[in-house]
Amino acid sequence: MKTVTAPKLPPIPGVIVNGPNLTEDSTSTSLAYTYTLIPSQRGVLRIPAIEYTYFDPSRAVYATTQTAPIPVSVRPNPNETAEEETGSSPWLLWLILLAILIVALGIGGYLWYRVGFVIPTRRKPNAETGTDTLERGGLRKRNTQGTETEPITPASQAREALEGLTHSDTTENATTFANALAQTLYQYLEGTLALSQRNIDTAREVCTHAGISEPVLDGLIDLLTKCDYHRFAPVPLSTDERDALIARAEAVINDIENLQNAHDA
View 1 (tube, one colour):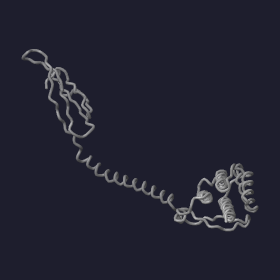
View 2: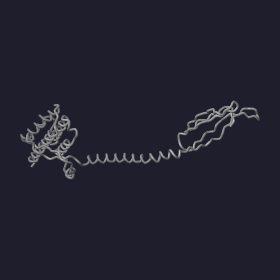
View 3: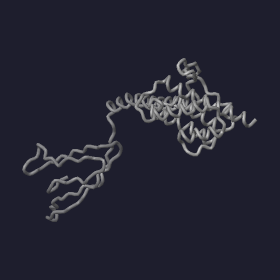
View 4: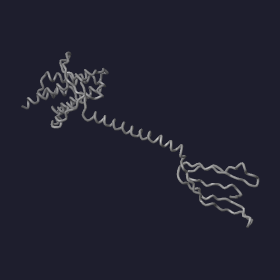
């Protein structure tokens, strides 16, 4: 096209327009311009109408007109792009499958651990205290058939709480463990003997009125005293020491239950 000034291309969506640039073969009477179009996406692009000004010799005037829209097809390089796509697609698919597999294994392992597998315990005599301690063994499945039919009582709730202490990670902290053990015993006394306040003196008074034998009462008071000591003293508790305290708590609960059943009979 012959123009007076260099045509200016309008903004084109998805295309970077560089130019106009004066070409090397331009002369003083004939100026040639080039434009560089850099598409940022594939597909069919449309260059809008280009408006330009020219000299009309028949009328001896300058006139303005515009071209028709120019469609341009942008296609990928058949060599480079095809190689990139064929090389990256399988790796991307394998990465997605690996991520899904890792998530599935993580969820499955968590559910497997939470639903029914716990560390079983067996009792062994403690030569120093004369009580039973709990020794940890391998993994086994919980027997849920008995707990489904067993009625919910203060004793069953206390035993469940003690079992939770046996397998809880928070028991590594002596203060947390001693507080949880004491609250389990106090809650059991509230449900069984109508304990009104959670302290050692009230527990002793309630148990005395309920006819709890002196050996059982002494064991309970000694256990609550040890819990109070470890709640406020920064003294660590080993696994065996924690297991021994849990076993003593279970023994106290069983003794009180036996005495209550004997009185009811």
